[in-house]
Length: 55
Image (tube, rainbow, N blue to C red; front, side, top):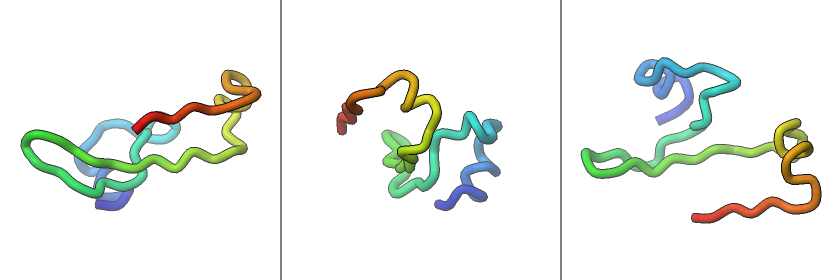
């Protein structure tokens, strides 16, 4: 599912649409992706030295 298809299901829009792609969807769970740009202002301010991502 791409961004345009996601926008049809969710009321959120940029900059608050934090899903770029849905890989899996079922009644129990969703697996999605979000691209985080190194130029993102939020990351520069909050995570100046490092970024920790957990799966």
